[in-house]
Image (cartoon, rainbow over all chains, first blue to last red; front, side, top):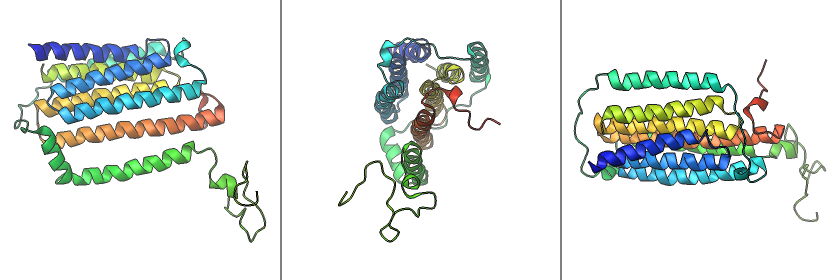
Length: 193
Length: 100
């Protein structure tokens, strides 16, 4: 009984706060609403016996939303919580597409004859995940890690305001002691500046 | 609490996120919509794991979804920063460089 009540509670909170993201009129409130939605989904995941994954979802997403709020302040240049705004386009068509997608997905969920469960959850789900990651599923993590590293590099390259091509020219030939020219820096560095 | 119910909630989250991703103009809000969609996929993955095949394979897939969420967020903010630097705007409508 209690798990069912908790499931319904977290489900309603997840969907309602998810919808609130696009209803509330400030971006700060929207990011808090999204954080609440993620916490509710993390709680449902914990209810599904995925303790470790549920808890890291909650921790990760709360941090992510905090970072998101910082970015919003940076982009908006003011306290976004105080600025009611409506920045949307094609509201009607978007709503129609979203409802259609929901109907299709819900129909699939309800009418597909789902197979019976194979096996039972292991006694210690977290331990079995750890052993899989360090054993048979190690290749997955080994594939994710270069992808994450590439993301770090790509994000820095995109977000960096002045890279080496700005400093040293397109062919990287400007600057250097033998050429007698200096790299183009707003503030010159090094000795004897 | 059944598989169908979990999938219904996941579908609702996905649809709400899709609405946001399509209708919002601010890049950060579009990303919030995409996050909400991945949130729905994540919940559906957890439900399918528990009700169909509770093996470590499914848990690994959930970790991959979490990693995808992180990558999306990082690259989205990087792209938004570039748009903001060059256009002084954080709206998707300003990013039309590839338009014909």
